Length: 304
Image: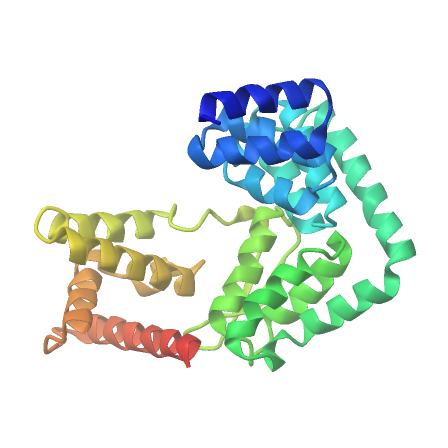
C-alpha cells in the first residue's frame, strides 16, 4: 500500500475502534510522515490499545501539542499514569497553566499514586532503595537508575532526591539531573546540594531556578561562541556548542559564579579542545581554566 492508502486504512480502523490494527497502521504512516496530527492519531490508538509505554514515548516527541489543549493533555496524562511514570506526569501537569483541568489531573494522579502504594508497596520500596544508593552504581548505570526512579510517587521521589543532592559520591552530572527534575516539578521548599566546584553546600529553592541555558550568563557565553566561530568553522562551532552545553549542565545553577568573562571562557574552551598552549592572563582566567579542566576530567570518567 502507498502511504495515502495506509492512512486511509488507519482512519477506517480508528473509526471502527479496531485499535490494535489502527495503532499498527498509524505507526507505519508516522514513520513516513512525522507530523503532529499523525502523531496524535497514533498516540490515541496506542492508548486505546493499552500500549502505554509506546504512547508516552511518541507523545513526548510532540510534547507541545499535548500541553496545548485539555483533551490532548488528558491523553498524554492517561499514558503516563497507566505506565506509572508518576514524576513525568507531575512535570507535565506543572508545565500547563493552572486551571480546572489542573485540579482534576492532580486528583487523578494522586489516586493512581495511592493505588500504587497500596498494591506495589514492596516494589516501590525496592526502587526507592536503589535510588538512594545510586552512587553505588557505575556512572553509566546511574542514568537507568534515574529513569527507574521516575516511577516513584512524588513524596518518595522527593525524599530520596534530597538525600542524593548531598551525596558526595554521586557523579556531579547525576546530581544536576536530580536537581533539574525538582525544578521541573516546581518544588517550592528549599533543598541543599553539594556543588561541583568547591564541594560547598548550596541552599536552593528549585521552583525559583531558571531552565538550563536560559540564565544571562549562559546566553552570553553561547553568544560569545557564535561570534567567535559561527561564521568561520561551522563544524567546530557545532561540536563546541554541544560541549559548552555540557559544561553549563555541570555548573548549573551557578554558572555566573564561575564564568566571569564569557569571551575568555570561550577562548579557553577553544584552546583546550584544539590542543593550543594556554597562558592565563590573570587569576580569574586561570581559575576558569582549572574549572574547565576539572569538568573535562569528570566527563572522561563518564566514558571509563
